[in-house]
Amino acid sequence: MIETLKNLDLTPFVLSFKLAGLTTLILFVISLPLAWYLSQTKSKAKPLLEAITALPIVLPPSVLGFYILMVFVYVDLNFSFTGLVIASCFYSLPFMVQPLQGGFEGLNKNMLEASYISGKSQLNTLFNVALPNIKPALLTALIITFAHTVGEFGVVLMIGGSIPNETKVASIAIYEMVEIMDYTTAHIYSGLMVLISFIVLLSVYIFNHTQKKIGGVH
Amino acid sequence: MLQINIDKKLHGSHGEMKLDINLKIRKGEFVALSGKSGSGKTTLLRILAGLESSNGTIMVANETWQKENFFLAVQKREIGFVFQDYALFPNMTVEENLLFVEKDRELSNYLLETTELSALKKRLPSSLSGGQKQRVSLCRAFMKRPKLLLMDEPLSALDPSMRSKLQQEILTLHKEFETTTIMVSHDPAEIYRLASRVLVLEQGKIVNDGTAKEVLLKTSGSQKFSFDGELLEIVKIDVIYVAIVAIGQQLVEVVISKYEAENLLIGSVVTLSTKAFSPIIKQNK
Image (tube, rainbow over all chains, first blue to last red; front, top):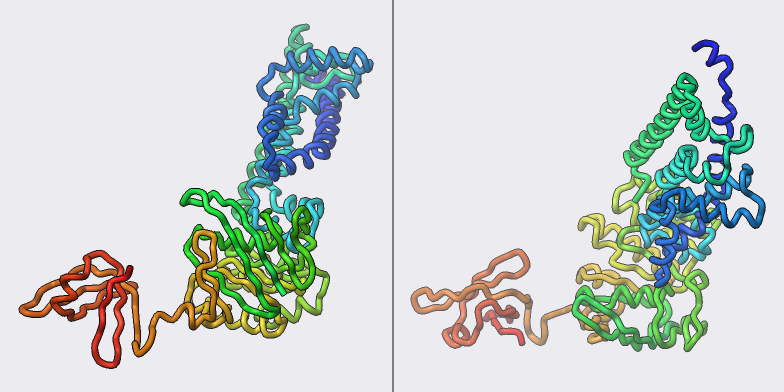
């Protein structure tokens, strides 16, 4: 046991968190305008866009993985870390967009209009009025996206293969340990995953609970 | 100063109706907009603010806000708007709420002082009372030194004493800035105190336009007072008839003649008025 701990390779965890961090960052930049647009538009195309955005939630990861694999053949991104990041962005998109959109939709419309009447543009209103007033939704979006990416397995398996130090993330590493019947390492890896995930979720809920008490949201 | 000639189809609670407004307002006038809910008052304010579209023209002080295909964006119209639900920015302090509109510390200090809010300027809106929030909202609306101030039932959520305090402040600020103002209100006392002109809207059309006295005072001729009420019951006591009428929260008894008793319908709206000596009860159309 002690021996296993000493020789424990933590690279899969580092890879997992690097992947999740990058994905969260990129998705935040992409999703912010998308979620804002969806929350404010009266366009008839809204349900269509919402359905497309929500697809990764219902699709089996293998379906998403298969299509991405087919496309990546042409751009030579299969079995690379960059490819994993791009695939993760598709996979986790709804987990960023939906909480943000929900947060924006819950804002007092008159408050946003008061900002426009004050002469402020949509962009100015988004950053100075809308975003600061949806902190719980913002935090939920960031954390859930991060956690969901850490927990991803199917897509990573199909796109990434299992190249050490490149695409072998924690979830894949656990799968391999089980396959070669190295249950001790699998136990340690899995235990770590449970612990980290639980702490992350617990802090989100505690934060949101206190925010609601302060009454920061409308 | 303000010339409005607009129409718009509305899907109200009573089916479809057409908002059709043709109106001129002089500079510095304080106009009260009254009428049943669903008559188009709020929509008219929102159209003026540029928050909703409509057909027609809006001219303000020789500046076109809307004409044919031209539509001046809400950001470019010089208006102040006071919402019934205050619509303050919860992430900013009282002072920041004002300065977000315009970085004019002199004006913000002046406004906060006038409305006795100076001591609260570092507080967040969530820690204020309803009356205080609405005063902040009022100050915020003045920060742009607007050409037109629009208020949508600004005081209806407040208790009576707070209401009259705010009415005084609105009056003070209106005198000071001479801002042309349109305020939606249902409260006759409030309209009488503040407005120099009253418009009554019904089904999207202006059905009454005049001074507060002309529009709101129900008495006519030699009547001393006059109330509208609901006729609840007519009781015959010996040889006289007594009508029981509900006026506001109060029930009153009125002695009526046999002829009146025969011609009044229970449940109808009646006008109860008195001249110097004899009370009169008359069924409304």
